Length: 467
Image (cartoon, rainbow, N blue to C red; front, top):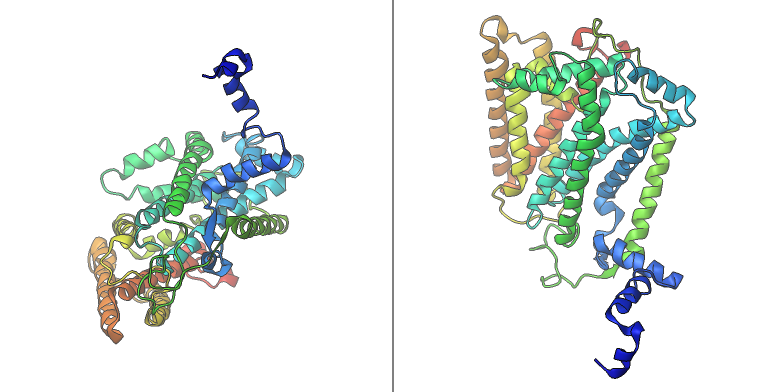
């Protein structure tokens, strides 16, 4: 050490550490330096310094992933405010919601924003999943991020479901009764699992406490952890999938055969877009919350079920399946196979990497449109026939008539459609798998629409205007 530093007490190790902490970049003196440090260490930590210009077009991703995150932040902020008023007990839950809407300043607006953000979040996540699928965002190196996204969707569905019971009115009480009742059909462990979820044999105060704890603590923590991991995987994969044309031989990259891509600074090009979309989305949620109120019916009455008693709209498709399939197939076999299929999508044997190409090719778009039309027509015809014409259970066991037979027919149709898609115009395995995905997704969407708008008293088919 030089002599001058030895004689200068201010140059000792403790003093240098002190200066590095309180006079270094962590606490900059200049306002401009402070702003630069914030952007360098915070914003650019989860966003690269530069991004490809062709990946930040709004029409490429529609901002669905970022919008979902904004909706989650709205849910957290409004949920924290609601917790100051809400009482998680059968005696106080309903009255606290009524008091919130009538006695608390802006209480109704906060509850409405929480309600609509929760519903929009499910819709945005489903659209985000479809966008990722139809742009090939599940190919390497993004395979596992697809699985993380599915886990996030599952957590959000659980969050909405656990929050659905909290108002403790007739609609929420009996909807929860129906959904938890479905779990009882699972062989061997169904009854035990139903008891764990309900905290007993029926929906009670224990159920309300379990759902409140899961809704306000356990599930939000899971969502935050999974979302952070999801965003990190996106960053590790160098951003969202790069858009390209169907005749491009490979995904475009700096080392690929395509023209060298144009990069732009994240700030302001990407950050400004995201900030604008966030403001527009928040304004949209507030407008919807001002116009449409979150429903609140009569207080929960365990002795009187409403007619019809329906599950929440995001589970109505499974309730509709129960009307056409044996419970074993509707609650366990079909959902389990669907979940395995969704998780396996990135790991199927594909002919080529179609990441960045919307619906893979012109042939893929044409086959997809045909599959959507076939799914709508066939599902509607099947629902009507099963309701008014077919009654196999009259002369064979229900598990065969409403379970094995329609399941075999369904899988036979899927296998035939797959082979037809493969042979038609020499379609690739990619396009055939996509055709099956569209066929099943549209079929379930039709079942959801039927269950929400075309089921009346006794779950009979009715026109929506005859409710």
